[in-house]
Image (tube, rainbow, N blue to C red; front, top):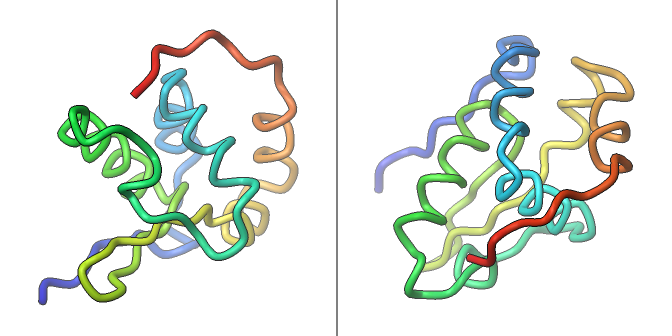
Length: 107
């Protein structure tokens, strides 16, 4: 099985993280993940009809270092990299999560 790429904590860049969080749909995904401790299966995050769109947004978040994805059997579990983000950019995630939510189109 192919390894899933995740940037190291030291490699996280503020501009990349902010760009990933700038999309309302990705921000909604991050807010949903913030309430989960161990992560959610990708299939729980959107409808099967929007699988390609969801995969794209999850890849952007993962490659920016906002989320972590791990394989568990045939599922992929996605979780928020809160500790890494807080270590690299203290307080940023709390500011983003506590900001007024914007309307988002459903997945």
